[in-house]
Image (cartoon, rainbow, N blue to C red; front, side, top):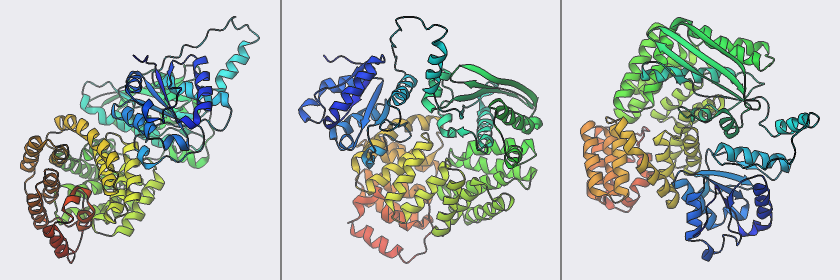
Length: 600
């Protein structure tokens, strides 16, 4: 039986010499590795022993080169590790373009470029990353203790191998309130602090979505800092009870594991804006950074002066992208109340515009939703013409009106302002999909899944687009992942008819016909007569091999108001209908009708 190790080295036979040298350096540093020294490109060498070694490893260390990414066996090892949700660390031996077949499993993962720079420093970067992924590194003990003369030099060498000075990660604040439903408040404060610090040019700030993945996880500061490439970690806790707020914040140096600064703030909800400004300014002072005049002004900028309106806005954001009928309707109520309290609150207008846009796109084809989405997006930009949310909302509004060029420009502007705006990426991807630009759409959907892994719609669109491009193996991998995560999602969101019908469609794809019909029936009962639901029911019937029922459902969807005929024509879920005379005739009849984009 093959012996397992913490680290499985995946490589191409053509890279054997330099990989063996690298493996020797890892072993010398105290890493327990498994490597097939015969090379894994030979089909006869890839079998049970390799699978066992993969299953027992904590990390797949992928040695990236042009020959490695072309190897079928390397691809199998990556896919096996990805499917079991294992850790992958790509180390580039030379500049290499990642092929589309590997881009999804490697999305959102730290890559290390080993081919340039100081080899010793590069090795230290690999060791830090492995440690952050849970690998035990049994470093050799020195033969003699470090005396007073050598200690400064040793310390200097250690400091050189640590993350670049200035990289800051703001971790999600812990919600220590009596009511767990106030998570939205602690998350909102975290994102607000990240947004403020991002305005300081001297701070190399870790992406908010990279930081937010550590919500509720109990790893130590060193492991998190190494995993994120951060020199400094900001963390804390929020306790809110009725109108009282208590916030504790600390700034820790990953190198020394010492707290550089910390403070506790107490006050009422009305004091929240003063507290946010103080925290940001004191972090900047603790890091001894110099601010320009405009940066000092930016740190004090407030979207609203009304604390209650701010709280309503945060609650609305928390509800909106659950994307259930109930949650979107509730988000609209919250945003409208925030606007009532502050009629110049740009973010609330943008949120309300997006909510009405999602109502029209996903839930009900009422014309007033589309009109309100457009009106509110213009008001958001009127009050703040540099707000990513506002351009994103306007992009969705234009999309719903079929103005694709304007929608593209608006979403592109939103991404330019905020590169981590996953909804702007998602909307732009759906625009490209509707236009038949599947390659561009796929890149954007992959980016959505990378930025916001918990957003199931992003994964669904990756799979659908891969199918449309004929990349069935990659699509199948994503569908299997969706079948794993959707049951838990539906337990938490039992009224999400759209998600339930999507789940039913994927059950049909997996050949689980009885379960698919059961879940699909539940979904249609939850939202009868909804055109988008009827469209998705057609997709489910296709997966079940029921083409007559599928075409009937499509006719019902059109009669109920479905008008996104461009999506219908390109939707890979309907590929088996492409040669069906009834479907061809229906598309011919629909081609003369006006179109309005919507989501499936």
